[in-house]
Every structure is written in C-alpha cells, then in structure tokens.
Image (cartoon, rainbow, N blue to C red; front, top):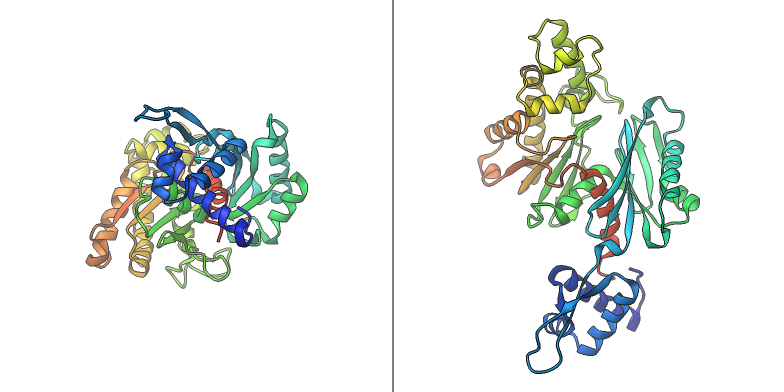
Length: 400
C-alpha cells in the first residue's frame, strides 16, 4: 500500500486492519468486523465498499437474522488478482501465476544451462516476456516477483552477486519494470521461501525459523521474531559459504572448503559417479543410468525416497557435513524449526532423518529441546510460493 500522511494514512491503516480481518475471519459480516476491530460501522462500511469495488473482497452469502436485517457476509477473493512468480535457479527458470493466497494456479518450467549462457538475465527476461504474452488479462496482474540465488538487495532490487551465474550489481527490478511496465519485486530465493514458510507454511506460528535451500548451491533464509533477517547488505544466510576445511576445495567465492562444495547437487552427482566407477552394487539409479550416467536430481531424490542402496551410500559424508553446518546455525540462532527444501524432498527420508539425528547429537541439548528439522511444508511449488510471498508481504503490509 502507498504510504501517505494525515487522514489518508489513517484510512489506509483502517483498510489494512479490515482486510486483514476479512482474510483471517471471513466470511464475516460488516457488524462483526466493527466489533472485532473496534472501528465504527461507517468506517467499516466505507472500507469494505472500496475493497468490493477493487474485487479483492466479494460477497460471501447471507446470514440468519437476529431480529433485524439479515447480515451480508464478505470474504477475501484470492483469485481475483494474481502475481507472476519467477524462480531463477542456476539451471532453470520457473514462471507461474500465483493468487493472493500464494497458491500456484499454473506454471511453466524453462530449462537452460545458465552457466554457459552469455547473458542469463536476457534469457530470463525473454522467458518472462514469453509467459506474459500468453496471459489473458494483465489488468488483474499485481506485478512480477522474482527470486534468485545469490546476494540480493531486495530494497533496491539489485542482484549484488551471484558467482555461479557471474552476475554483479545487476539492477534487475529496474530492467524488468522498464521492459514490462509492471511492478516488480526481487529477493533472494532462500529468504523468500523462509518468508513463505512463516506466512503460509505449517510452522507459521513459530517466530524463529530457518529455511535451508539445497540444490545447485546451498543457501538459507532466517526468520527472526517473525521478520526476515537480511543483514546490512542483504547477504545474511549465505550458509553454503561457511568454510568447513581451510585447505579444502577452492570455491567460486574465492574461499576454500565452503560447505556447498560438499553437499550441493554437483558434489553429490560426482559422488554418484565415483561410487559407480568403484563398482557399487547395481541399484535402481545405477541400473537406469549405467550407460549414459545422465542422472538428474529428481532421479536421485526418487531413489532416496525408495531407500535406494546407492543413494543412501552416496549421502553418508554429505549428511555429516550438512549436520555440522546446521549445528552452527542452531548454536548461533537457537531456532524453533529448521526446514529443508531440495527438489521433491517433501517428506522424511534417509537424508532428513540422519541430519536430524546428527544435529541432536552434536548441538547443545538446550538448543535441540523441541527443535524440529523437517522438509519444506509448502509442497512442490515452494519456490514460486516463495516468490509470491515477497510481493504479498508488501501488498498486505500495514501502511506505516
């Protein structure tokens, strides 16, 4: 909402309070809104009429009379408008239409090897353009929300650094707004998904939450007292660049022994190849791909869900590394819950179970008392839900 002053600001604050009440309590009558918010019936009626005109709220039925007029219920209409969510990873782009409850209504995936691309940003903007060309009614679009790995200045809309995609100080928000004529938000992917978990996930009641993003790299988003902790330059949560071996593998960031070089998908893929070269037992993974060695993350995670022998063997050391890294987070931040997102990993598996066991073994007992370590609770569309959450956080924020 736009920030103004005086009477206008008061009206915006009242509208925010009323909309929040409708979103959380609807269907609800105007009189009940007035009672709950302690605002005057006139104020409530005026605000509700404005929301009805915008289409954000709709009539939700007629109640029973208690002696006077039958109450008319109103309710939030999350499908009345939408956000174009965009998730950039180091290997593909996901673009989808997401409603005002962060529910993904449709999506498209655009695979591409960005690390070999001359200009990953141009490719991204072209794919967004392709998607927008197929949208029927852009008047209902609230804007485009883009999330990406790396250090992101969310306030200014600038990708400060993404080593894998070779991006430095890219003003993506400005570039996208100029090209598409729509409002644009941009944020770090792990921060965005942590926010989505806090607002729309199973553990939304927890004030201190850490989300860990696995895949091509490793990152984390930190929710501290219900707010994203970003750091002074937007770089808080670069979990994958904790050094676990000063003489270890040289990282793209310039340091040695960074955690992501031991637990990210490229590292795990190389471990699979090593196991196969050493003659590991033929399993579902090795049997399917023994000739081409074309093993995707989805292949591997599917095998892991089925307790595949090779998949479990490959993860023995990465589990140790990840657990030790998480222990540092637990001892530093003492969170209520840690959630891990990695492709289709949406339930307990060998990986989650073993990480949980190792963390509880290694961290301070007082910090692990009640601590939950679980896969993401947002389902398979967690990245696009994260993208939408960035926009929704601003759209529905209190105008102060």
